[in-house]
Every structure is written in structure tokens, then in C-alpha cells.
Image (cartoon, rainbow, N blue to C red):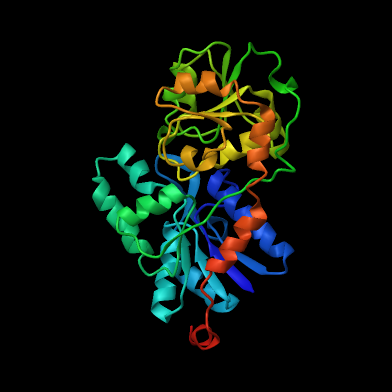
Length: 340
């Protein structure tokens, strides 16, 4: 099968969406499928306002149409709702070609955190985008229920996974110089990640933030006692996860939170709020602690054995995620593809 994935999030960006899409793409290629990526690097692009690491394709309509017509895919998946996703959606509707889509990011909450725009209106925009989709892939049961409550149709549950060969327990040498316990956050350093809820906590030991983003410089100035680091590649990232004593995830708006699963695979327990994302990742596993008082969650998570964290992560594989992805695709009939 020839699958085309259209995504406004792709390399050189480093975030959960890119991790998910690339992991699925690699599994499909290993199975003999062809996978084409329509991504911002193929277009003239510009930095996203307030989030310059994200590049937005400029006026992509004609080129997206040409690529889809030339590639003649067997299925089209729209991974994001940005300029590329909208251009591909328009082409599909114009030619009567079915497609699937995904809801990776809670854009209504993210936009509302930056601009005075009503949430119901923002959800309406997202609902309109996904309305023609044959299946809207939601990364967790909680997001599935949330979208359904907001009037989305054809929502299906699509789990996420982790590379347990890469993210595996290592020694604690990388952060051995810091006072214990080491409380770690990994991810984008942006306003919606709610990092002050972690950095304001009165905790013993050390606080470490690994990642980059538009809020990093301001937070470094505001919290001089915290350690702000950058991981050079996934192997070093896995070493940071392993070197910590607890992984603190302060976000209340993530659809899943893949970094939590990566931490668990490295044997590091998770402390988080009891909200969608952490609830879906941890479930009833006991591989961490969820509490409205994040300091209590961090202290309790320290008691969780590393073996329990690793065992839970091993239940979530990318092969299973790829199986689900393929089962949800909407095959394009050859007459429709030829007409396009």
C-alpha cells in the first residue's frame, strides 16, 4: 500500500507528534508499504508566531495538489490541522477522495492560553476540520471521550508506543553530580507545558529540565537553581531519563504525553496531575503517582520500583500502533484516484 501522510510537524522539529509519525512510518516501511511525507521542508516556510521552532508552509495549495496527483496514493492521512493539512483536506474534498485524520494536539487550549479566544469557538474550528474524515484518530481514551463530548464524529482510539530497545534502563552517571533525588522534566519548554507548576515546588534534591522552546530563556532567569539542559540525540535522552529518580510531568493539556512512556521504559517512575494524558499512560499500572498536589505525587513516585515502570512500558509497542493505523485508513478506490 502507498500511504501519504500530510503533516505540518516534521523534522527538524523534535516533539511528540514527530516521534509518533516517524515511528509509525518506519514500521510501515519495514512491512513493505510505501510512505510519502508531505511536510514543511518541501515548501517555502515561515516561523510560527510565538513558536518559531515550528515552520509553517506558505501558500502550499498548488504544490500539495500536484504532489497528491502525481503520487497517486492508496490512502491519505492528515496528521495536523495546519496549512498543509488544510490544503490536503481541500484537495481530497474537491476530488471526492477519502482521508483519515488525527488529533495530536489540543490546539484549542494552546491558543486560548495565548489569545483571548473562546474555547467553544476554537473547538468548533477543529470539529469543522475533522468532520469529513473517515476516522479521527485520538491518542488516548480520554481524548476520544473529550472529542466526542465536543461533538466530533467518527473518533477512534489510537494508542501510542515506545521503542523499548532504545529507551531502556541505563546507569545514573549522567546526573551523578547533582544532589538526590533528581526530579526530571523532558519536553518542549513552552507555556502550555505548565512548567512553573513543577519548578515552583518545594522538593529536596535537584530539578532538571531537558528540552528547548520559546519559554526556556525566561524560565532559566526565573529559576536559577534549576538545571536546564539539551539532549544531543535519543541515546543521550535515554541516559537522562535513566539518571533521574522521578519524572515530573506538569502539563494539564497534553493529549498523551509520550515522554512519560519513554521515562517509564527507562525505569523512571512518573509524577503528574490526574488529568487526561497521565491517566491514560499510567492507567492502573502503579508505575507512578497522580495527585492534584504535584509535590505529593513526586514524593510518592519515588517509592515505585524501576522494574514495575519498565514492565508497564513493555506493554505498549509501536508495532501495535502501526496495526491500528493501517486498520483505520480509508482506501482510495482506483476510479476516484484516477479522476483526481
